[in-house]
Amino acid sequence: MRICLLALLLATGSHVTGSEEDRKPNFVLMMVDDLGIGDIGCYGNDTIRTPNIDHLAAEGVRLTQHIAAAPLCTPSRAAFHTGRYALRAGLGSIGRVQVLLFLGGSGGLPPTETTFAKKLQEQGYTTGLVGKWHLGVNCEHRGDHCHHPNTHGFSYFYGLPFTLFNDCNPGEGTDVLADLKNLLWRLTLMVALALLSLVCVRVLGLLEVSVSFIVAVTCLSLLAFSVWFIPFHFLRTWNCIIMRNQEVVEQPMVLDTLPQRLLGEAQGFIERNADRPFLLFLSLAHVHTPLFNSPGFAGKSRHGLYGDNVEEVDYMIGRMTETVDRLGLANNTMMYFTSDHGGFIEDRDHRGQKGGWNGIYKGGKAMGGWEGGIRVPGIFRWPGRLPAGRVVDTPTSLMDLYPTLTHLAGSTHSHRLLDGYNLMPVLEGRTDRSQHEFMFHYCGAYLNAVRWHPPGSESVYKVHFFTPNFSPPGAGGCYKTKLCFCDGHHVTHHNPPLIYDLYTDPSESRNLTSDTEPRYQEVLQQTARAVELHRATFTRPAPNQLSWEKILWRPWLQERFIYTGLTHARTRARARAQTHTPTPQDVPAVTERCVGDTEMFVHGLYKALSECAQR
Image (tube, rainbow, N blue to C red; front, side):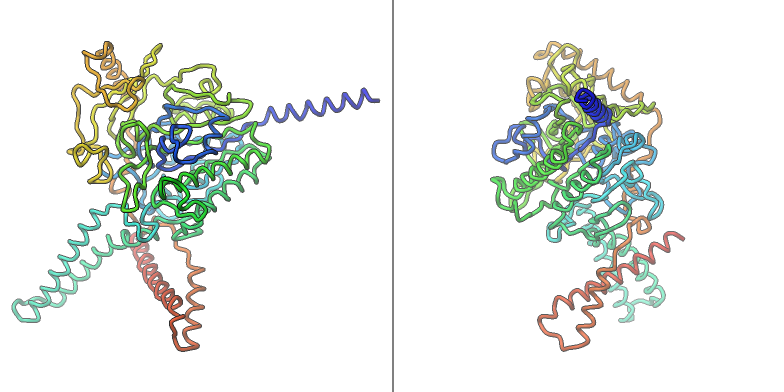
């Protein structure tokens, strides 16, 4: 009898073990926005406290040459999701605007592109995105959601369909075409002055001008004024929203509690799906400006508000790791931590530095191929599968996530050209070299630099064809324009190109010549050949998703307002105002009523413009 029971127990245990082994792995991907590689303890920072991220690295694999496909949000994230350079999806800009600017624009990640989320969804995964998207929403009309996360393979979405930017926090200034807005204001004032002069001339009898002409010109001027004023003045309303799947649940979003809500949504997603294979992409709003001022972290770091935000990020990463471990999912869950690109070094005000630190690396966000804008943290943890404490120095890319995840999920390889490679041989220690012999670094739609890791060599050569012009001269960034641009007088082309060996000169400070580098001619020849082959893969250019036609605001593409709460608040305020004489205590209610009436007017104008446009 005992022997039978023992055999039964062994058989049952064997069955459970086999079931656990057969289950597909879970994936928890965590991306920070604008985080510098030098902001993290395990990458050399000894003044900002990041114990949870450091612990994640100690328990897993840390990549030291992990490269973003672009130095700005929209193109970098497009490449991350698809495993392909953003230019293949039409998200490489040929002008000054290199990211999506309005949620009501028609540009975004085309429906023809395939994301890793969609591939995993086909394999039976429950997929979720919590946080920032910034790859568009609608194409032709409100609600078509052709660019929406749900369309691109995420079963669940909660977060920012656009991004966090200064306009979301009143008093922080504006990030969107501020110079154009100022120019339009001046033109509007000139037109208004001209109209006033015309009226005065007629009233004084100095010139015979018909009233109908003045009225017509005035109406046209008001229409022209509304066309630019409504998108710019109400940016916070248009862009700063929270969606749950395809429904707007907060407009404008409340920043004070946003970090806690994103964390809670991410933890809740894991808890709801702990018994099935899942993919969660937690795309944090940190540390993009405006920076958060969370009570538990404000004033706690040694680096001002920015340091406070990085330490809050570390807290959130710790809670995510704790959730995975508490649910007993650690041994079957790959966790990944990174940033979409380097830190924004030009971003500062009277309170101090608001952007990140990129360590020893030159440049930063929006600076083309300079290392500081594209070299980012890369940490993988998977207990029992990946060796703890392993450090990988070979070049790797954010685009490698697509083939790595689809390989682990058992997805069949698509015939679509990918620019990333499966990282598992490198992560598991079966090889010390990735398959990336060449990498191509873009500034907008322009090929800015090429990285070459010759077989059998520790050298990693970087060839720059042009570089952004820093301003003022001698500075380390584009402080006059705040962001560097990719063409015209904003760049300097180099012939011959600048060449650096990142193995001996990671800060890109010593340009190699034929006198100082024996392989100088070989580097030029090999990279020129690689560029030729790379360009040959762009057989059919994708429609440009970042043209002015695509990025400018269109009322018929804008997600709808939410009025229920405001309507109830206005009703209560008006009822109270009708029952007693106003007092100083009534100021909030009266103010709310005025705001509500203004919003009703804007909504009416918005609706009229939408109906007119749709006709």
